[in-house]
Length: 446
Image (cartoon, rainbow, N blue to C red):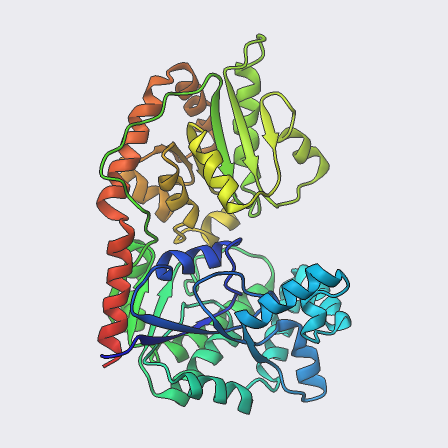
C-alpha cells in the first residue's frame, strides 16, 4: 500500500491522556508508523492527545434533545478546533470549550445528574433514550465516507448504544472490523439483588450476540476471557495486552528508608478497603516512633469522611489527590512497591473477575516491586502468579502478613522488582504489542 492505513476507531470515551481509556489507546497506537486515525466517540469530554486529529463526537448529554425533539445528535470535531478554542479561552478567560462548541449548559447539567445516579432503572432509561435518538445523521455518514477507512477498530463495550454504532458503521462501510475486550461484558456470573440489573444484563447479552457476527477478528486482554468466550463468538480470540518500553538491562533501585508504597488509581468498587488494611498495618509497624514504611495514594476518587481520614493521617499514609501522568511517572521512579488491588466484596469480585487492569502494566513500567491484592480467581492476579512477577495476596486476612513480610525484610523488594522486570521484558514489549496490532490492521484491510 503506497499510503498510510486509515483506521477508524469506534470508542465510548474521549481519547484523553489523563484517563485509563486514553492511556490504553496511546499505548496501542502512539508511535505506530504507517497509520492515519479518525475516531467516532460517545462522550461529552473533549479529546486531549497528540495521536489522532479527526473526530466525530456524539455527546451523551444531547440524548434528551435527540429523543424528545428529534434533533440531530453529533458533530465533527478536530484537534485544530480544540487547540484554537483553548488559545481563545486562555486569552479571553471568558469562554469554555463546552460553550464554544455550543453545548447547552442545561443539557450538560441534566445529563450529569442522570449519570451520577446509579440505580439500574436509570441506566436502562439512558440506554433506551440514546438508541431512539436521532444519531444516524448525514453528518456522521459524511464523516465516515470522507475518511474512507481501510479497517475499523471497535473495542467491545457493554453498552447497547455503542454496539449499535458498531453495527451501523460496519453496514455503512462494508469494511472489516477488529474488536478487543478488557472486561466481562457477557457472563451471568454476577451478583445483584436489583431486578433491573438483570434486565440490563440480558439486554446487553442480546446486543452482544447480535453484534459478534459483525466482528472479523477478536482480541482479549486475558486468557481466561478468551477461553470462556470463544464458543460464544464462534471465532478464535487472541491475546492483546498493553506494552511498555523495556530497557535491555535493569538494576533495581536502592530501597528507601522509610519504604515507600504507592497506589495510583481509582478507589471505587470498594478497593479502598484493601488500602485501609495496608494503612492500618503500617500504623502498627510505625507505632514505636520509627517510621518504617509509608503509603502514598494518588487518586481523584472521593471517599466518606471516615475512610478519607484513615487514608490520609499525615504520618503513615498520605492521599495526594490527582496529579498529572508525567508527575506520577516520576513519583513511581521514587517509590519501592507499586500496589495493584481489587475488592474482596462478592459483587465486585465477580464484576472484575475477567478484568486485567491497565494499572498492572503501569506497575511494570514503574520499576518497582509489585504488590497485587485480589481474590484468587481474578485474571490479573492469576497472570502475575503464573509469571512469578509480584507479591500476590489472594485473601483480605493475608494483607497484614504480606505487608509485615515486606517491611521486615526489605531486601526482597529488589528481588521482586527484578521478577517484574523479567515478566515485562518477556511479555510486554511495546514494539511487539504494536506490531501484533498493526499486522491485524494490515491483514484485515485487504
